[in-house]
Image (spheres, rainbow, N blue to C red):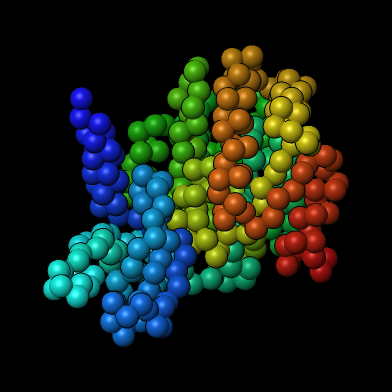
Length: 305
């Protein structure tokens, strides 16, 4: 049996994975790189590939790269050894694009992210009501059927129309939330977000993992003021128990829907630890008034009110 075959296979797969386009998460410029790389400054970036993997690699760009910029891989000569051996490396070429220009005040998006039952919608509606002169909720586009418990936060459409808008670039962030009972697509339209900016107000969005990543990818991480909302509890089990209690207490879903939401919630809680870079603040939702006070303190425009 060839014990080296699996190792070689994994090594080749890693190399193939690196040949995917991606997005700049962060970068730094080495003004004095190691001698073997010559004397010119080298820009090294943390790249998130399209498959979610992250790699450190050189960024090739005529201008200074920016966070959120799209890049594509290519092979290039890295250096030559003392014996004259030419060593090649995977570098990432910056694609044409402009850094996101913060728009008319306040110029950023307030994102509330958390598992089902944590209170995202209640908090977003309360913020939009209390600070109505300064903020407004962004409607969520969805393919699911209307429910009696909906409170005006959704715009309903067909799967076909949703896909057409996504391909046209109107939907800038979308997700298909797993469910055993129905196909549910959700997304945000750039026109809705930018219409609120044009009023001089702060857009408030309710997100989950993929929606938050999509918004950060499109507008740039620097344009998102992100709050991670957590249920009370010292352990993962306690947090999930609190969520389950809230889902059952509000009486809006069937048991099948609740089971789906709890599966997704477990994944969402792990996401907070894996992608801390996507959150500016973490807030435990023990009661509504304390959460609103915490958000008010941390949002520049709200804090002076």
